[in-house]
Length: 111
Length: 116
Image 1 (cartoon, one colour):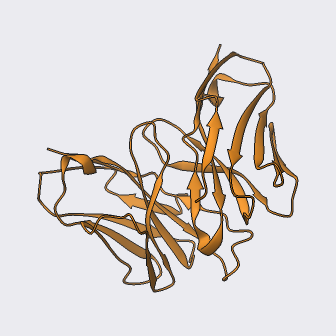
Image 2 (cartoon, each protein chain N blue to C red; image 1 turned 180 degrees about the horizontal axis):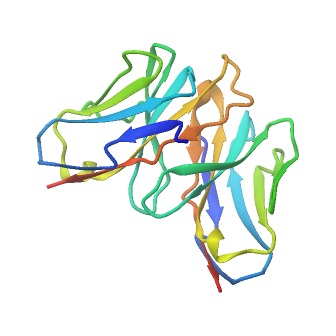
């Protein structure tokens, strides 16, 4: 059974800092990994999708990496802003389209 | 422009009174999912439709049912809500063939269900 872990559960940084969020998974037989952002009381917004054959994806200040062999992914946020404050979730998709989510990392960026 | 729309955003229902949550999509995606998310927890997949094929998760309670009358709409029916069913319910869609390599999931804004 796939297990997804995100560490830390919460992170607080001053504005302007670069930061890394971590996601680890136990079963490396994945089809893809997706990073989401969730604001309080809202749905999930897709940030980046990394296919199993890819090593990284970039979108603006965000960079996500994938190392299947070690069961790890990171989300790098450059020059953080208060508007980046949210919960970040990673989800891995394995067979039959089943996605398993981590519990998320709640990020607070202080002005 | 919202592509996955959930109605209502907030739903209050009485203990034991059946309730239906709605999801619609403008993406023409063949796969639709329902997730349950409790506070500070990961979304938990309840079931999904691959076209008209219904796929129930093994640990989804019988109290939860779903209908997909057409490509655009999917409903979550809770037959007898209990206090433990209070949660955020998220609908998602994706488009894929039988190989799920580049499946990107798109989520709605969720329906927060309160049971009183």
